[in-house]
Image (tube, rainbow, N blue to C red; front, top):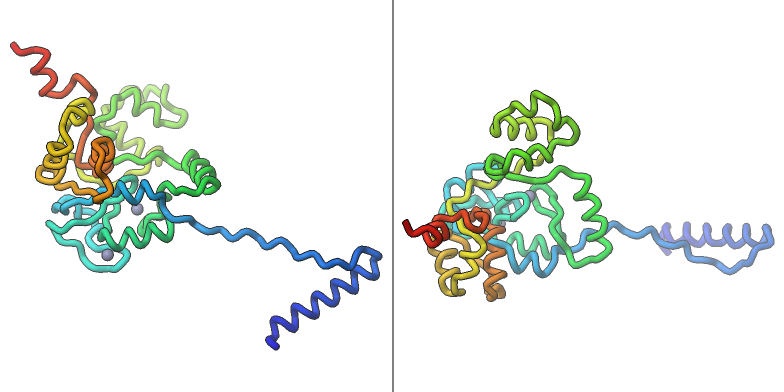
Length: 254
Ligand SMILES: [Zn+2]
Ligand SMILES: [Zn+2]
């Protein structure tokens, strides 16, 4: 008999003795086990829509992305890899799939990706409310000034703030930790949602694969899913409807 088992029996015996002496029922109640904190896997939908990129030099500019943190092999320009959408970390497709099927957190920064666990999702959303919003520098630079001001916790009416240029305000937001900076290179393509939705599945696939170097899982077959992967890839800047060149030229042929 192991030492642990002997100890457990001795504890149980003294517990029963105590209950008998104190006149309580001798029925032994198994103490409720403390619930273990288990991180669930990423949701099926998250795994399905992970953007697969043909790596470019700018994708590997951040030293942390030069190797896959799961297998420690270097990434090469031109090879296909997954870039996680909300933190920008790059991994081999197989490596990050295996990883996220076990737990929903990024292997580099531990950012929590969506899960299918209802209870965990409630806690995750609460945690997200307490953390700073995540943006890349180019997203902040493009953001309208009033929207940038809204990211400042409490000093937004400060005269100094009002006089700042867009770039100064972006740097200020980063400096005070009002935003969490993610390292995703500036997108090279711009389309509006209307333009993307007008494309056929074939056209959209061709644009994504051939021009943007963005690929997706074979389970992604619907146009809306493809658009969602394209947006998550970080290689596309979504234009407000009516601001794209194509639409402007249609409206104003002269
Ligand atoms: Zn790897
Ligand atoms: Zn990450």
